[in-house]
Image (tube, rainbow, N blue to C red; front, side, top):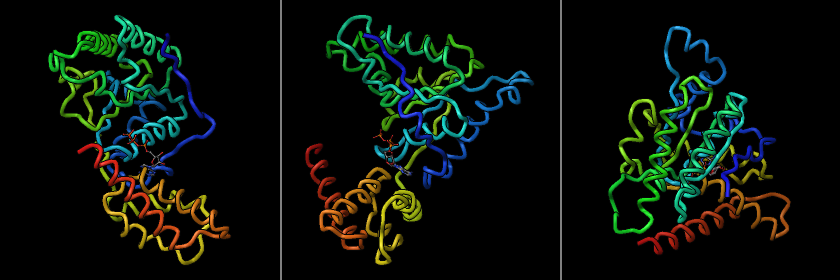
Length: 270
Ligand code: ATP
């Protein structure tokens, strides 16, 4: 089986306008957009463009969204693969997928390659040696390191990887010339939640009872993904009641429902 790079839903271009809050992270990735658009402005004095950056933060905070927005803003294709796709039981498959990935990316340059859950392959080597497939995972990781070193920094391929556990990553991945930049993608604060609600209320038909500030205050600890969920859920609740517009009480019900879901998830984990 081959790792195929697909430019999924390339018709729906994501831009920074779709990413609410995360102002520092956006500023940092803005530079990557510039590298992709005008590489010569950076390399003409002999500098090397970074090969990749690591997006670090809790689930659902917009790491994938931000990576897509970089591609959208630079107008280059976006390819994504999950670290867990590299971890295979069969000897050599993971490493050959990594080789495939880089070969295809170089052909499609300039482009963004997004590796979600990089910790699945990038956990520090030599730990959990009692698990059977560990050697195989290490082969895959070594291949990834080799490929990162092998492709020229001015190849037009920029690798963005995401994790919520930067602390468990193999230090070799973070060395200069690999993922030497870390960009933090945090849970949104009150103001950010307001901005995220504004983005996700755009397509929803709401009436004047719905107040963005109230919603932001009702949702401490929610991620951007949770907020997107609330907006969608509220619209479904109102539609079920055959309403013409989504109202404040539909949002309150949706928030309760999402909180219930989050509590259940936490119970399973702990
Ligand atoms: P995971 O670690 O679980 O893969 P992630 O950090 O990659 O999560 P995304 O997949 O980017 O999170 O977010 C899921 C969805 O949540 C997005 O497609 C978007 O609808 C919404 N979302 C998350 N963060 C934001 C944000 N900052 N602004 C607007 N929408 C957001």
